[in-house]
Length: 312
Image (cartoon, rainbow, N blue to C red):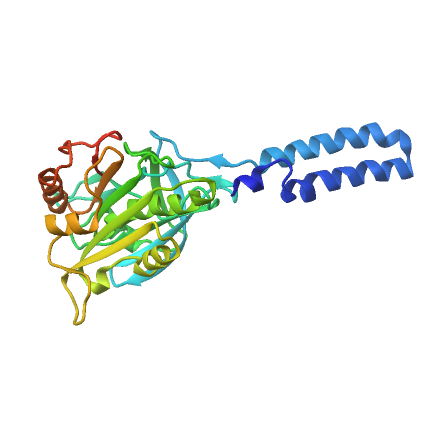
């Protein structure tokens, strides 16, 4: 829900509260004037309820797992899907700051015959500007716990969620430029930030983004159409793709992300530049080492918001 929709002078409030209340009072003036005080009181009560019920409600709780029902499941490929979950009301939002993520929990059987609660972190590809639901892009792995569990869900079933989690909180113009390196599903927090930057252009967000997105095969590139569309629409967003197994006539990078690629496609180290990393652990370790060799400040084992190199 946009800020304009929440304004007390928005069309939603004019049509839903002010006009009906005015008609009620005017009607009483015409029919029976002594009813006017009661009509005013009734209009205030009904208007107050309408305002209260229409308010934006944040639902996430950091320490409490809550159930959310699967509304839609959109199959992207044999092991990738977008899962849409209902929030409690059409006005509900997760209340997830840009750059943070949620934890999904499930009690799963273990090899020894016992059951254990497993938690994994995911970044929604939707945002608080889209009330009533949230979307998760998840790739299921044969050895995955939660990802395999998610793949087995059918519409109407629920998952347990808590949050927000994470040290990154994006604010407009917090840096002049982001360099981003993502691998596989590590694209989700990058996309969350990129979309927030583009939404903020109208109010003065000038942040630029250069993204290196690495995958094994071309068909593994998640949300490529979305990324290409965003880059085409906004000259401040640039994407460079890298594949281990490129097809013929591939014009992107080949192999693993190298220091040479980082130097060519991402911004140089500076006080107003931040490098964001998200992907498989071996890739993150390699990128931390490479970035330090290129002059970025050494990344910590656990990243903090103020770090020049931040790994999700």
